[in-house]
Image (tube, rainbow, N blue to C red; front, side, top):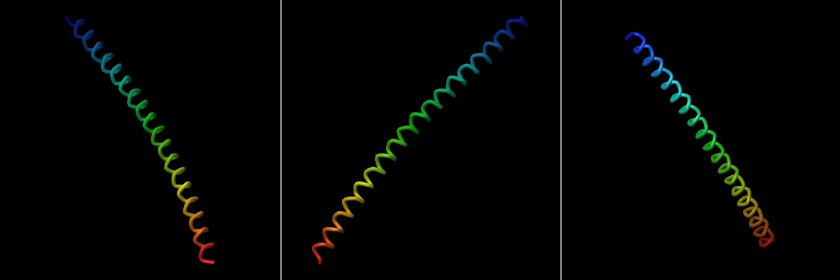
Length: 68
């Protein structure tokens, strides 16, 4: 009877450890993917801001030329 209890305890601990490790790697992978997506969005935003900055500079130059 004592052997069955130990076997159940060992099985429970092994299952819990396996499930915990699987969940850990799942969460780490999801974190990595979301981090990559966020980085791509930041680069896209940076690019858009640079284009807008270029357009504004061009417009300012044209306005300055019109005033002269």
